[in-house]
Image 1 (cartoon, rainbow, N blue to C red):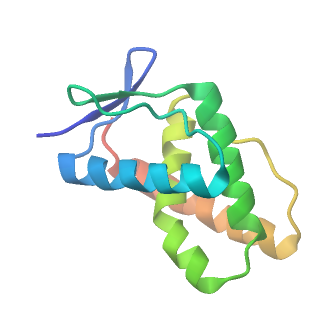
Image 2: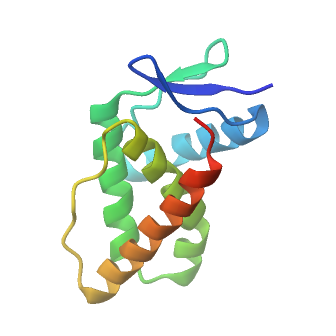
Length: 125
């Protein structure tokens, strides 16, 4: 079984139930952490609708937080989720706005975007 993340009738991602459930629980956690809605709707009948404008704002906030942190454990805990969210945002035509970071933050954000590209090849849409 699998579930679908859809935007304007297009399937952005079709993960297994377990992966989708874990991702959605992480979405809920980061919505609280950032104080921002993700634009990723609830899973109903194996489908979640994605609002691209809200997802762009959420992904921008995720990337900004990631680029500002210097805490290695926080980065390690965030890597996979943020990269996955970036893939969804890109597929929804809602790539996050460029953020101004110091040199170290910009380098971390660039590495994360590369990771998102790698994940994108493994994420079936």
